[in-house]
Amino acid sequence: MTIQLIAQLLYNLGNNLNKLKVLVGMSGGVDSSAAAYLLKEQGYKVIGGTMLLSPADTPEKYSDAVEVCRILDIEHRFFDFRKYFKNTVIENFKNEYLAGRTPNPCVLCNSTIKWKKLYEEGQKLGCDLLSMGHYATIEHKNDKYYLKRGKDPKKDQSYFLYGIDKNILPKILFPLDGKVKDDVRDICVKAGFSISRKKESMEICFISNDDYKSFLIDNFAEFKTIGSGVILLNSGEKQKNKHEGYPFYTIGQRKGLGGGYTTPMFVSEIDREKNQVIIAERKDLYTNNVIIKDLNWLLSEINNEIKCSAKIRYNSSDKPCIAKRIGENKVELIFNEPVFAVTPGQSAVLYDGDYVIGGGIIV
Image (cartoon, rainbow, N blue to C red; front, side):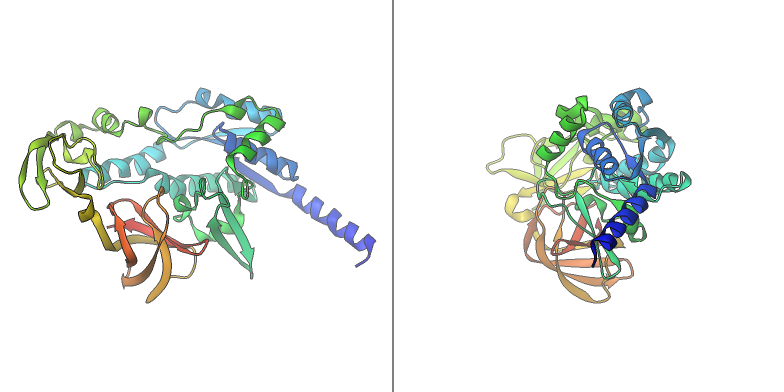
C-alpha cells in the first residue's frame, strides 16, 4: 500500500468520523464527563444529554453536567423522563417489595430508560450513536456486535446491561473501555473539569441516604399498614424477636433480626401472605439450582442447554453452571458448586468467558 493511499484512507476515516453525531448521557459525574471529552477528542460531534429521572430531580441538580458541556463547547439538552421513570422503574420497585422480592432498579432503568428512551431521543436529534460512561465493552467481529465485560473487574458494569435490546449494540460507544477509575479522573483533570475529585455515588438515584424503607413508607400508603410480624426458624420454630414488616427484608440479610441467637442467622425466606420472615444458619442458604424468567438474549437463545457461567448479584463473581431451558421464558441454572442467598427479584446474568449471553430475573 502506497503512502498516498494510506494518507487518503486516514483522511476519509477522519471525515467520516466527524460526520457521526453521538448523544452522551451525562450526570455531571467523572465517568460521563470523561466519556464526552474522549469522544470529542476522537472527532465525533457530541451532544450532552441529561435525564431527569427521580420525581425530585431538577435541572439545577445537574449544573456540573451543564458546566462540563460549556467547557467542551458542545450542545447540552435535558430530557424529562420523570413521569415515565415513576410509572416504570419506581412502580416496579414498589410492586416487587410488596410481593416479597428484592428488585434491582438499575437493571430496569438501563433497559427501559437509558438504552431505550434516551436512544429514541437521540434518534429524533439525528444522532448516529449513543454513549455513556459505563465500564463495559462492545466488540465487533464477524459482522456481529457483542457486549463484553469491562477491562477493570472492579468497575465492570456488564451485569446491569444484559437487558438492553441487542439490535442497538451497533449504535453504542463505551469510550471508557480499558480505563480504570484513576485514568478517568486524570482525564477530567486534563480537561479542566472541577468535578475531577467528585465523590462517586453508590446509592439508588431516587433514594436518599440509601434508606429504601423510609422511601417506601413515605411514598406509598400500602407500606404504612404493614406492621411487625413473626420470625420463624426454617425448622418452623417461632422466635421471640419480631420483624418490622416483610418488605423491609431480603434474602441473605443478617441485620435487623434481633439478638439472642447462638449462631449468626440470615433471612432465608419471606412469606408475604403471612407477613413472616424465616431465618436460618448460613449453611442453609446455599443451593445449586436457580430459576430465572423474563429472559433477554444478547447472543443466541438457549434452545436446550449450554455450559456457561452466571452471577446472581452485581457484587459477586460469576460461577460455572449449566443453563437449561425449562419453558418458553424460563431457564434453570444448575451450578457446579452451591451459591449463597439466591434472591428472588434480582438478576442472574450469563457469560461465555467475557461475553454476555443474556440474563433474566430470579424466581
